[in-house]
Picture 1 (cartoon, one colour):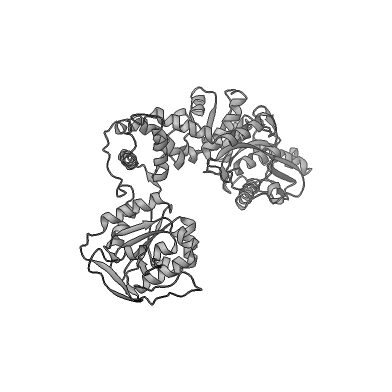
Picture 2 (spheres, one colour; picture 1 turned 120 degrees about the vertical axis):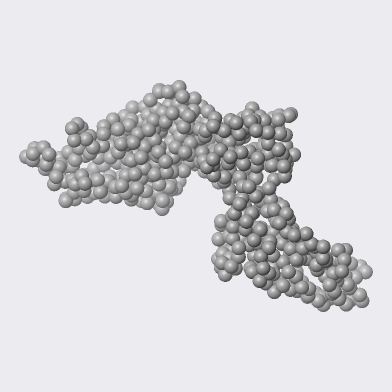
Length: 583
């Protein structure tokens, strides 16, 4: 049995061991991804120097926003060798005749220097150039493909997928090494005949998983041949110097946006917020948009250095701005519109924990939900009400089936199981998905079968496998805080708490109110490894015990009585042998 009552120190990332690192004097230098993105940097180096016959396309999995494109652009610019030769063409228009010659000067209209350019969003003329008519005649204007000729062009996958005609024409230009002039208006041909021009260009395409997936469906062979890498979203903390690397990264971002210097007290405060975002005490986010937003917000609350206080003020203000929906949810519970019990003992009812995410809302919020189970004489079927009502998603259905499989294995019998039951999420009016409530549902089912009441001062979260092992779930911080807020509104009793998977302990980064309540012994967190560990906490009886009453023996006795058996005729050690195999 593994039941761990967590100490308050385990509810937050460890910042005490890094105190010396936070006190260092970090130099403000330009942001360089080399130290935080070794895979990306190595891939860019290879792409910039690879043989011309290799694929001219590179795929980078990253957020396709200007912040990411500009970082990659700066890295490519540093990697590209300096060139002094003139690349490109010169177009001349005389008496309605267009001629092309190789560029001899950087001032020629289609000359390029073989550098690197990027753009987050672009239109046809911006990418491919155009022919313009003036009163006195015509002129040709270059696009990005001409300006970056001989070098590298960085583009957003999302932009190209939104305008497929851009992508197909761009691919044809890159693979043929030749730029052909076409009209943008298919109903009107070019008024002049324009000679094509040689063009050598490499393309870096940046997109998220969904965008790259769509591109792969469109161009499976190109994706297979292209050089692929990723912008790593998080920095794994394996040693203390990794924290120093992250602090250096923060200072580079502050320098990039011309923000005040960071005081030593700012780092532990930023680390806690960062862990909250990553959802793991051993991983720190590297998203430039997220980190710059944190620093920019904090800078508004200081005239000199960014400190822990300015970060706390900015975070509190942000939470307050975004908490209207969360307050409404808590108000519904406080007013009894949503029924949640936090006192007493009830058979077949348990407090599950869920995370609500509303479309368009930036913040996920935790909410306890009442899961109930009723059992009656029947043919052994356990009905999932959510699934029957078509409100349960596939993952939820999978969790319920795994829960039933575990119970069937535990209660192995040579005769038909004499009970049927139903499990429901009470007051649930939308789709329920995920398997994080399977532990809570299993405990409610066991309570109904054994007729043993569950302590309503606990909430439970975690998924289970077919062997009863409790597994990791997501949104653990929001779930714990959602139940804590309900208990705190009703006054903490000192015996309330949350049961969670042991493997989720590393993901904890709870708000100060929860930490202080745990520290004062007013609220508790219990980390477990198996469903057997949850039952002594919830019901007050062990799951199996040969020498005293247990949950399993209560279920066995009820099954015998339901089947009309007379167990008193058997010797005590053999009374359950016809029904169960304990393995």
